[in-house]
Amino acid sequence: MLWRQIWESYKGRLLGLATALLLIPIYLMFGFWNMLFCALLLFVGYSIGKHKDLSQEPLVPWNTLREWLNARWRPFK
Image (cartoon, rainbow, N blue to C red; front, side):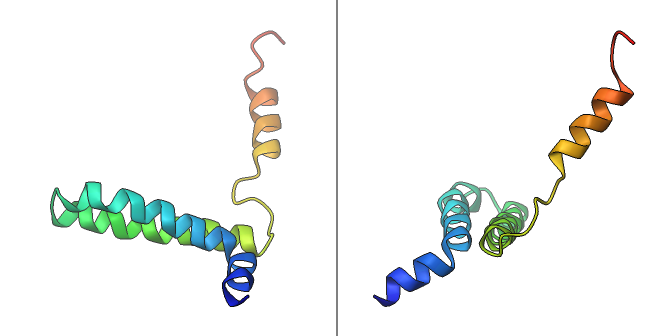
């Protein structure tokens, strides 16, 4: 029961960390700077998962960006 509650509460964070943890062995074989990159992957995966868990608005407002780009670079005005 406890694991189910943890999964329901922190699903996004756990999936983000799991994805990063699967990629880490690849990078750890290649040196210190790549290990720092792995730490960045962990942080990004956790942050995106936390953002999803908290049901906040998207980090990048894709609809607004798409509308701006369409208005700005419409090929045939």
